[in-house]
Structure formats: structure tokens, C-alpha cells
Image 1 (cartoon, helix red, strand yellow):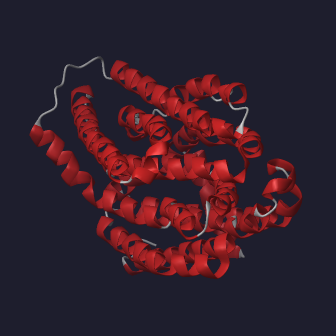
Image 2: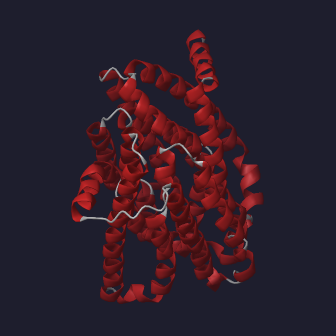
Image 3: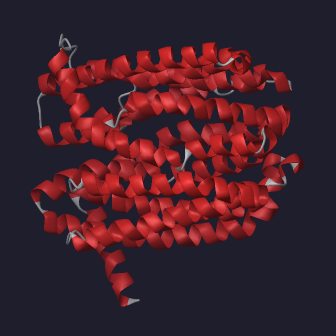
Length: 428
């Protein structure tokens, strides 16, 4: 117990320092942005679940999961690689503008490839064609993702601009769901409105960044674009692997069961994602700090990482236990009686909040910030292979609840492996 108390006391000392106060300011700004990204959808989630019903709610989840693949490819690891490059470069506006414009160009090219491939898939498979309109509505979020520069403001530690770009469009557009979604067939409007919010946020973010950089006239070139691809490919590969045990599992569930089961599972998953989003701002605010600290003073970075890990471990474990206990009373009131089958999934899946929080500290603040990209890629790559082999078995054995149990166990296994690597590398 004394060791825990020492770690928590050290965490308090860190937060009182200059770097800690900067982290807290940025975390507060990101918390408001996350509220717009995740909490606002959670407010309309019960309404859309009741109006659309489990089947059409499942169609929304499947469409957005399919769009997520294009978002994943378009991001190409820039969220981590470009953030680290900008945070460590200490560049002037001209240098930062060069990074921004080449990341923009690299993402735009990938987006066009994804759009062409998606349209080709709908052309080849006639059974998919009725959902082409819904998919294209969802693809607007990918366009917005091209312009979205959260990584840039994260790198320069001016995250208040992310808040402005996120909150205003979503506050204006999200209530439109209550206006236009009145019948089960209106599920397309849910996809369109949420995608438009991402598109407007992306454009707003681009305008704010360009004003911050003084409207430079930098032009992209082939060499700069290829340099960004080389820089981001390892974190992209890691993101692809991670996707195999997140968004891909929803698709697997749909392939092996039906849209109704996906509706029950995705309702639970979205609620859990909203809870996880409460921790994301702290992680995003800490990442550029640990990138700089590991480069300047690895010993100090290691000590701070231990304190953060201890705080996250105990706080999130306690929260997961409480949430699991109250879920049977709260969930039926939130989703309505038709989603009673989501309760058991939530009671299990809520422990993934604890496991993912630990993984984020060990993987993002630990392995990636310390420059151990290859080790991180091996961990998530191995997890992806295990997921592909075992997730279908878990679904066959226990449907949504089986998938939830396997997801939690896999996240715990990832945390254990990452911890052992960091101990072996003397980072922890």
C-alpha cells in the first residue's frame, strides 16, 4: 500500500509542476472536445435506438464500421507519427506548415484510393448496392478526417483549438437527429448528420490551423509526401492490427449472426466507447509530453510513466467494477426495454475500459513515445492474428457475450505483454 501511496503522491507532484499544469489545461480542452465527439452521440443514442429498433440500429453500426476502414487507411498512422515529428522538431511556422501540407496531401491521396475501391466493391456485389447511398453519406466523415488536424494542435500543445473545431459544429448539427429521424427507415439521416458534423469539424480545424501558421504558401511535393508515408507506416500497421480486434469484430458479428444481434452488441459497444472517451483527453495531452521527456530525460520519463500507470490502473478498475454492478438498473432506463439483451454484454465489456486504459499508457505513452515502434507493432500484430483466429469461435460459442468476454481477455493479455517489454527495456 505504501508503494501505491508513493506513486499517487508523485503523480500529484507532477501535476502541480509546470509540465503537469500544461497537461491539465490541454486535457481539460480535449475533454470538452471529446464531449462533442462521444458524449453528444450518447445523448441521442437512446432516441435513435428506440426509433430505429435493433435491426436498423445494427445497419447504422455496420455502415459506420465499413466507413471506419477508409478512415483508418486515410489516417495512415499520421496521428502518432506526425504528432511526434512536430512535437520534437521545435520548428517555426514554416517547418510546421511543411509537415501539415504534406500530411494533408498524403491523406487526400489515400482518401481517393479508398473512395474508388469502395465504389468498385458496390459495383461488383449487387447485394450491397441498396446501401450505397448510406455508405456515401458515411464517407463524408472520411473527407472531414483529411482536413482534421487534431495531431497538429496536440503536437504544439494548443488543444483549445481542437475544442472549438469540435464542439461548435456538433452542437449545431447533432440536435437535427431529433428533427429528421422519426421512423426506422430514417437510419440514413443518422449516418448523414453525424458525418456532416465530422466534415464541418475538419474544415473548421483546417481554417484554424492555417490562421495559426500565418497563411503560408507551402506546396506539397512528391518527396515530402513519400517521407510522410515512410514515417507513418509502422504506426499505420499497428492501427490496422488494432482495428482487427475493435471495428472488425462488429463486422464479424454481423457476418456470423444477424443485424439484430449486432444492434444489441453495438449499443453496448457505443456506450463503452463513450465511457472510454472520458480518459482519452488525458492520454492525448500526455503523449507529446512523454515524447519530449523520453528524448530529454529517459529516467524522469520512466518515473512519471510509473505514476501515471498506477493512477490509471486503480481508478479505472474501481470505475469498471461500479459500472458493472449498476448496469442492470441503468441500461434498461437508458436504451429502453427492447435492448435488454445489451445488459449482459455491457457488464462484461465495461472491463475493457480498464484494460484499454492500461494499454494506452503502456503502448502510447510508453512504447511509442519512447521510440519502440517495432515492439508495439509486434504486440498488436500478434493480437490481431489471435483475434482473427479466436473471435469467430467466441461468437459461435456465445454470440455477443462471447465476443465481449474474449475482447476483455485479449486486452488484458496485450497489457501484460506490453508491461513485460517495457520492464525488459528498463523503461519501467
